[in-house]
Amino acid sequence: MNFDPSLIEILQDAKSVVVVTGSGISSESGVPTFRGEDGLWKTYRAEELATMQAFISNPELVWEWYDWRRGLISKASPNPAHKIIAEMESRYPEFLLVTQNVDGLHRKAGSKHIVEIHGNIRLVRCMEEGKEFFLEENPLSQLPPTCDCGALLRPAVVWFGEMLPVEALATAQEHIQKADLLITVGTSGVVYPVAHFPMLAKGTGARVIEINMERTPISSIADFTVLGKAGEVLPELWKASL
Ligand code: OAD
Image (cartoon, rainbow, N blue to C red; front, side):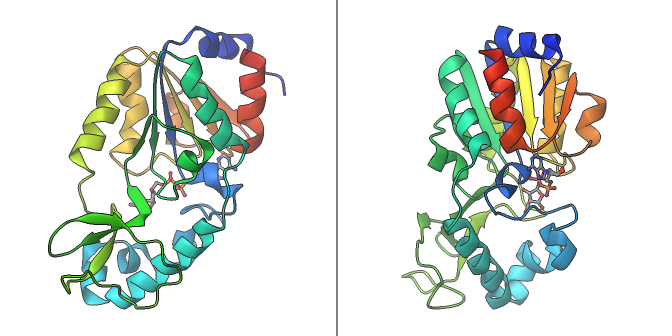
């Protein structure tokens, strides 16, 4: 791949970097994205599966869907894009990875400075006590699963209409405001507040690089949009910047 020399320079000169990832980074690991041709929201309706209202009216159906996704994800392994992002941590003095993905593949790849801003699909939360813990059983023997206290457990992920975890959002915004480079990978850039992050970064003078299979609303403000598969583009880009 041939890259614009100023794109490589941006990667070489950066000191404070934030990487924002979306479901596209995991598609080469076999985890379906939400939007696009084979996206989950083509087959399923978000409002019937990923909202508190849906959960209250049919917890079994919601859990069936999450149990199926938990199964897919448990079989998935990180791909070269996850691995390069894990490597980036040791190169930049300031680094934060903000992922909208709940699949845990970044941690599997070795990322440590990470904010899982939409939660983690292996985590569950008691509807009564609010406590969170990892529930590894898959497939679940009981749908919907319940807590020791008898209350329903829900997936500890962010659903539509819910606030993002306050601390995670604050950490992300803090890093973005002092970043000199923000890189988005495999996100459609339509779900707020994360969709606003590139604009926030531009507002404080950072450069924005986007890696995606297609152009998105982020493309219009990005300094560079590199079109291609994250698992192919990122390793090449990284090698060229060493
Ligand atoms: P989307 O499914 O909206 O977008 C995935 C993006 O990845 C698209 O722009 C694709 O073009 C791109 N893409 C697909 N394969 C790729 C690849 N191999 N390399 C690079 N790019 C690729 O996913 P998100 O932006 O993560 O929220 O969606 C954000 C949120 O919407 C999700 O966290 C989820 C969803 O509804 C909730 O469930 C609350």
